[in-house]
Length: 402
Image 1 (cartoon, rainbow, N blue to C red):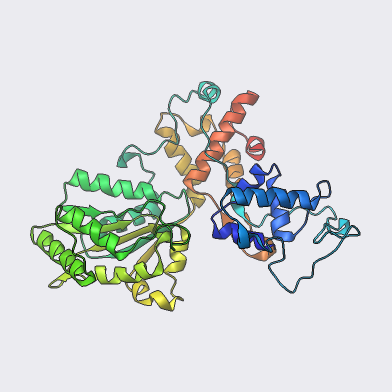
Image 2: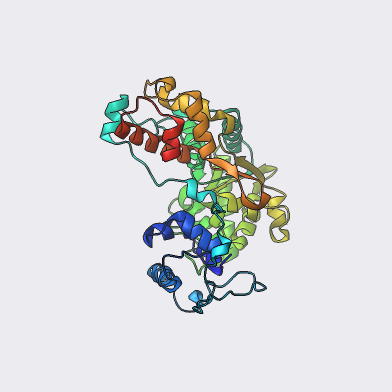
């Protein structure tokens, strides 16, 4: 594995984007990065120049580029070809082996949109995969119902909750559902949502969410017009008093932080103090963190630096659709008055399931990207392709070609 891989991960850059922009296939880039196998038909130096140029275009320069084409394991010796190029490809290493795709990201598609041809061919006058317009349009599986109700209970009792899921798993939809339910119930619940544009977990990569930003958001929402004190303790006291006054008027307060995987550890630790704000025996502030899987890593029981938060925070995970895939698709098409069996049969549904699940290399277990957003893009692309081919329904072969 090349050090280039760690650099891409650090800057949140995908191998798929790199492959597209340097005009190489994703399997080729994956082989290069993960196995140090280079193309025979293109000189290594030419490929390296393309990659370096792409990285520089992303603002990565100087010492960050040193050694990126070296093996991440320092014990692996560099191999030389007769021409003297380092890390050159050796023909005997190929042996008709299929390229190992270490990351399931190669199975994901960019945002797909139904073409007019597909809409007409299949009678889809509305997009089945548009964002839900109300809570009644949500697909509520037993797992989603559990997460949804857990989130709703946060508004009634002082609770510290983290909702963790992959990109496209439905985290934001569940947050919107909470807003809609509270509005419909006319509950005296005040939602506080601090927001930092371009939030990152350290100041080197972007802006960080700090305790002062949370104080500002609480005061601006609960007690508009209150002047923010300068001192840290004075600010915290002002927040405490504002929450107490609001609570005694019958209000409950919920602090919701989206993209919480980007919260720096110091701020994560400060959340314990916000959670401990009380009026007698009653908690004044519930806290909900919503973020990608990195948030789950930050809240791991093995992390001693955040143990006081971990002991108080319940983590709820949004898992892939799994066996609910068929029911989910049926629900989505019923929203536009379309029967699923007019478009797909069980065989094509299983082909879609296989497309988005698989085994990791080197017996590292299985993976699944069977989340709503990935499903939407795969089915949309398949419908577009089927319309181009004149196929009356989606088939396993069509999904294989997407």
